Length: 381
Image (tube, rainbow, N blue to C red; front, top):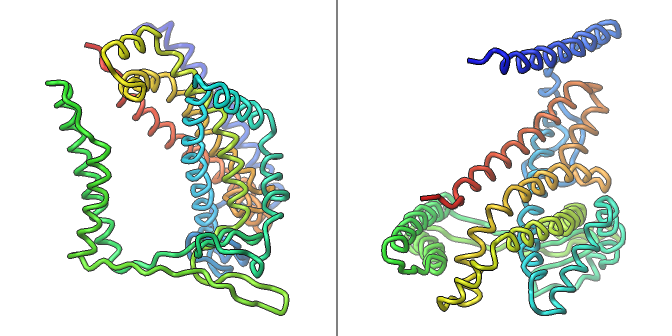
């Protein structure tokens, strides 16, 4: 073992420990001088404030820890929605930028240049204060397809009321496991004799057949609860029943998706252009269609270039979701690092928990994306 290589690392580690210890000691001394106690016991105390949107049951009688969970789930919800839609839009726009059609190519370029050069906070303000504020009041809203209502108070959709939901979920899990085995079988078959298996069609069929069986023999049933308009007062109306998505969630998800999609589109474009022209010509020379060339030749190689920078965009989107406080969407920052902090005064404890939470979310995304990157990597023989 080379001591000269280890010594700088030991010195760096000791320096970090000493700096952290110095600030921790000073913080402890200052808190003692001001009579401020340190601890996380406040998490079990009654929060005494309500939240307008929650994925779990919550009211002011619940604890601060429950309020933390509400904010965390709301943050995960908007981040997940943003990641899904940003990926879909980014892939479509990225490929469109490489189209031979001049109109499609230039339209995609205009989209990228427009949305990525406007600050994200301004885009959030636009969707919330301008676009969504122009929507009709609940009593004036016309139904979309007879069951959806888009109003100034949010987007109201039907709610699914399940019976024996656990059986239905087991059928989905069984379908996913079966798809995994089908995919492995198709891959081995292609490697052995070059035969293509319609994995996508088989997967879709399995995801339909297995749940259908749960309805036929598993006792699963489903009822749909439709949103209905309700008068609260002489001038106030709202919808009762169904699921209501608040305008804050819609505005934030739209802004995060459209903004992040521009960067993902550039990652996709760079990845596709990183595949040698000879690869594309060779694939076309053996009779593959343009779609087959893209699916079987270009994308497997391009993903090695696309995934690492795209991971950064997923992390940025998750952290940018903290801008939700600007439009009062009840995310982790607004509920926990905002209201709870002002009520309890536990700045160090609450800020440290919030920072650790975002760090955990970011590391989890990084671990998953790194695992996927290794999984799809082309194995050299």
